[in-house]
Image (cartoon, rainbow, N blue to C red):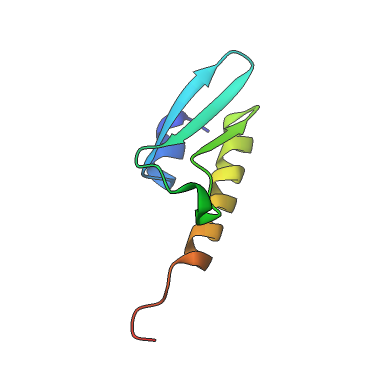
Length: 68
């Protein structure tokens, strides 16, 4: 997996190669009380992608459905 692949799957995040792992930061931060993270980490890009997938599921569960 490449950084470009992760970025294409999870737009809205900036990914940084840190010593010993990877860090993703939201381009637009969410409020502290939102229940969401502004930073997610992973030892590998695959682990980071899994953590971003979890974060996107959390975000979808907190987004109100239109028309309800």
